[in-house]
Amino acid sequence: MRIPFDLLAALLTLEAVRELSQRQREQDLWLADRLPIATPQAFLALAAFWLIAWLLHEWLARRAEWSTRWGLWPQGLRVVATPGGTLHEPARRHPLEVHARQATIAQFLVVGLYAAFIHGYSWPIRTMEWPFWLGLDWLLSRETCEALGRGLFVNGLLGLGPYAVAMILALVPKHRLLAMETGRGEGVRRWLSFELRLTFPPLILWLALYAFWDLAEWLVPKEALRFAVERPWLMVLAGGLVLAGFAMAAMPWMMIRLWHARPMADGEAKARLAGLLKRSGVKARAILEWGPPGTGFANACVLGPWAPFRYILISPGLMRLLSPEECEAVIAHEIGHVRHGHLGLLVVVVLGLAAWSDLILRGLEGLECGDPVTQGVVLMLLIVVYLRLLFGAISRRCERQADLAAAELVGSPFPLIAALEKLALLSGGVREVYSWHHDSIARRVERLQTEGVDREAISRYHRSLKPMRMGLLVLSAVAIGLVLGLALAEGADSVENPASETAPAPVRKENGWAVSPDRPRQG
Image (tube, rainbow, N blue to C red; front, side, top):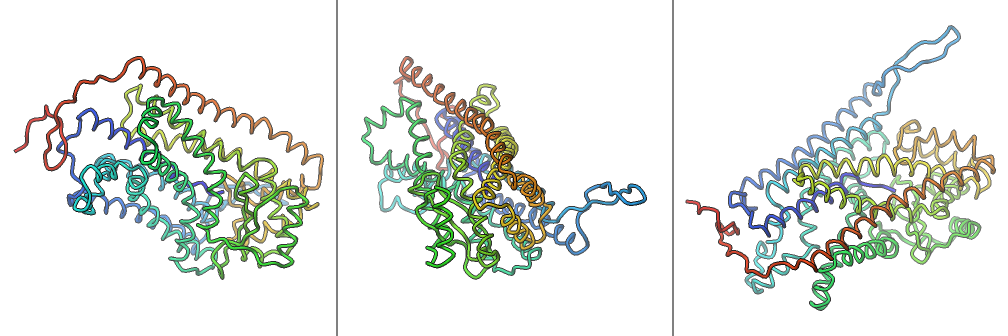
């Protein structure tokens, strides 16, 4: 499962800046010397942000290409045993491994630049003027345009737009590097289209939640909406339930359409996979093919923790590369994720991350460290620690469990070993390359050879993971419980101390923007 850390950090940073800008607006701290969105300086800053994002990733890709032409990256020294004793020789790392690590650092630098841009130009507030940008005030009343401008869905798209463009620009050098390393010459536009469709599922979840709140604001009676707004715990609970329900039911259905998945033709391959599902006891709605036709894309996955909305996906490229027994072993690995509850665990991790982010932002505000730069840095550190380190460690163990479950289901570890070796060769000789969420293929093969033939060892490993999964569930549950508790306290406080009904101070405008009445006029 691909988890775009940089996109998650950008989403959380956008939310933090949006909240701060809203508070400034409500407190009449809207400064007239902030640059309006339509100034040349703003567009130059946006163009500079995109240029820096592209140049940074272009430089990293060219370094990796150079290392491929002239030898692998040095990795210090390693000890080598020889008949005459031991000697030290330079160890080498694969260029793709080095590039992946450096690109991760570059991605977070770009997120930092994005945070500086949207804060410096108050981007989340400026995007609320989009109906006026399009001239809709000629057709609709000003009140209607302002109501449209407050919609979260469109504001979310416009708010994340600068970072989405930077992501696309960063992928162009990566395509050239992968084509050189793997020998596959797929067109850049086709590759970009599929890569973005693989990367954007978190964005779909986020936009779905925004669409829910927009529909609620338009369709729910005002009295009922006011009742919910006065009880923050109810809003938090409703948002969590919508997010979890969408992830479990609607998300798989949307993803198979986003990925252009299509029904697998009847034949021996489909019959074998259907028989494998029956033996495993796992139910799925359909077995589908996915991936750009006529390319070397080789992958398989399972979507949906809930059986009525569960799909098994396998690419034609994988079926061409592997034998029928090896294809069965790969699908058995994916079935292992379902049998041991890994998909539901991922949903819990996402909800837990959102809850911990909210708690940390509240803590920063209490310490008067609520500026977007500090919040952006802390959120990126949270994502790295929570997902890259904590969930990464759990994910590697879940992958190991799925490998052993595949060996258990097909009766031997060797079909999966053969499939992994072929995939490593196809991907540019990445057998020794470390993966934060899957471990290296060499390590996985070694474990399959030693543990996959021993059913008692397999059962013992399955039992050993139960405390770890329970710990992650408890960690997420504690964060969600704290958020609900704080929301309950805020709701009680708002009832005991209702807001003053005193009319707000009049707001005047300069250059079309609202400013504090205490600010001296310019010019």
